[in-house]
Length: 396
Image 1: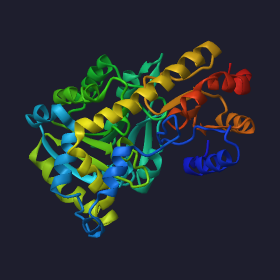
Image 2 (image 1 turned 90 degrees about the vertical axis):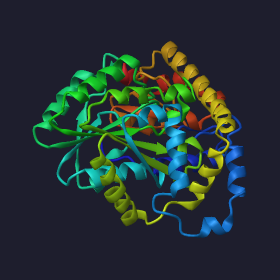
Image 3 (image 1 turned 60 degrees about the vertical axis):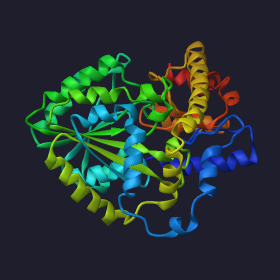
């Protein structure tokens, strides 16, 4: 299947919904509450309270010391002191989580080499190609669970041809499936990565949606404990999306946090990764940095707001999964988050069939992505049955 322009499909769906409110627009990863409001009140208040003079000035390339401390504290939370015992920790601001990924591929990758990604994934390909690298896939699922065997197989293949391997892991609330690794799978993953001690492994840990983990804000940070078991040849680079966590999608704010087991890795990040950011976007997006720094001082209060959004997502997910089961609509394993992925043998054809019935989803390689974050709970009811009725016979 050719490249799919998600934003273009989303614009079409949005225009059609303006004309006909009954249209189902489940295309893009932005959270709307059940009143179809996008903006979180605390975020709006923080925006209006920004110091205009400070906001309009050039900011620091890395976001500044206050931002660095805040983003490290926000992401690592209660695990920070534990991680400090093993790692030297760095942080800098990026334009969205995608900016963090771009820095990894450009600063740690080599042209012509390959990045290891899952066969079901978000559009990392654009950023990998921009760094003049290529994609190498591992199979994500085997019998409804994370396929550790194939991951090791693909790492073995890459390890023979390149010293450094960048491996992208998107967890929890995986885009596009909503999958989440179990504790057992995390332990197995660590064991696999530790086997490749003759190589340098860069774990690009994409946590774009982890603040919407249905298990809760604190529980979402539990996997950081497993990172303590990694050997020194593995360097973890965490890609955080404040755009998602604070619903400031167009503002574009993210962060790249490095967990460096060696002084050498720490110095490399401070020099070359920051220089790469300077060469790409010069300074951090001051509006986003200002909002984030302000809300970091009200962390507990804001987490309460996040919990409400996460609960709404969980309700929507539970409804869809249960109704999909009843309708015998085949979906990939879902644990939580913004998206559900429906199996499809011909996603482009099924996309067109659904559009004819006023349902806009995103066609992907082997399925149709449903952004339950972007539709109301009432719109979720009955959706699985509608999709089954429209595409059912050709996908049984």
